[in-house]
Length: 413
Length: 140
Image 1 (cartoon, chains in turn brown, purple):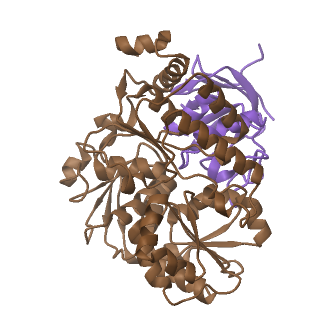
Image 2 (cartoon, each protein chain N blue to C red):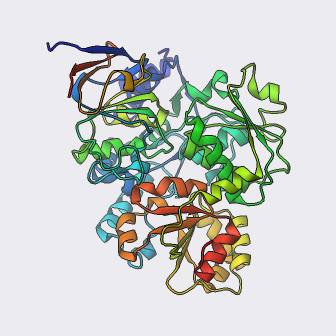
Image 3 (cartoon, each protein chain N blue to C red):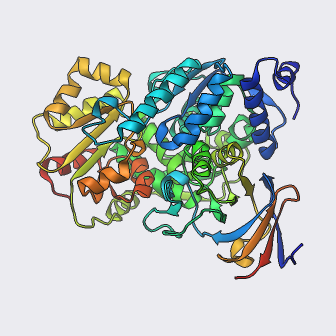
């Protein structure tokens, strides 16, 4: 790999052992992918929570902190596994919660801003066309590439942190023009009225085309999609398809026309999504024992506008006895939602609001499922429905209003 | 050195030479979506390998699924002593690679023949990243 004089200095240890280790690691990753150089980034979003890092990851972070590591660029953190005031209510492990607090402290010491959100692109930082960033989770990356036209690969925790320390990433994948061109075409004939409909599209497109190298180009979109709709589409494509980018002709910045979006590629597939296809997705879920005791709005965290809509749907209603409803969002969004009274309406209906977490990352989720006797998890998030399987939930995707009806009547169709 | 029964080339590779029992999946993989990260068992209901133990195995997966979590998760399961010896992917994604390198776990991408044509679960295989090959050493 071609290194600049500064990078060679980093490798010699001129900027300390933590930077040296981080650069060596990034070079190994870059070599795997055939990267020829490192490129500078302006912003980092990293995943770092105790549920996924475990004791080993925490120990590693302590060792790195002892090397006087400090991030050289703004770094925000993704949703984590505890909302501390709810630890007792959820019967989570207090020992693990203490480790999470320690982990947060270590990150802060190393110049990481612990925002604990997976919707940084809606709330914290909006990179411009061509700007290089190092983001994870996957939903943030696909939004950065597709909607902003910024450039990022999926940067997992250690890779994003190394990018924060060195202000660099290896140049491969979505940093290269060649990787950003559309590879297949999706004609959107369906009427998409709900966030879950956009998630259903993501499932239909992602599942049969599962590859980081696949970039779908959507055509025929009937209405101008909102940020929340693109968020659910992107998070779903990343989840079902492991995809890091999509184009939408006339909507996203690198797709003024179909030809430009394809950039000379001949699409390997042209698929059409109809209303019947969307209905088939909803009908495809096994309702098992038809229990409706868990309804979740999360994955990604809700925006202020999603909270506003949800609070209107729950207004004057009450979650049925025996059912639990969870909503997750960030500190910033919830603060604004409280000011507007949305949180109060949801809480009055019996909804549990969680801050700084995402449902599927919650510590002790499998035990929580067993303790509560949950079988079905019902959500309007196609990503959440897909991602939570390892905890052995039976998951069901439904439109937002249907989720509210299910939560307030205890009945599912 | 033991006799090599089959040799298949891979496109990219990282890590040490490792040998172990093959686990061959027709379905993709994510440590967050599919794996119980406390036991090493594939736990997602309906996964092609549901109930399979991946500790010390050479795991063949056609694709990588979703998530950023693998970046930390491989290091975590290695510290817990339940990591596979190698991950052999048809198509992978950066997270799997970042995670495997962080955990110093052998990983490869791409294959010159489909796994179903040369290896079965239970066969003994060797992965040699430097030479860019997978070798079948012994049939089950």
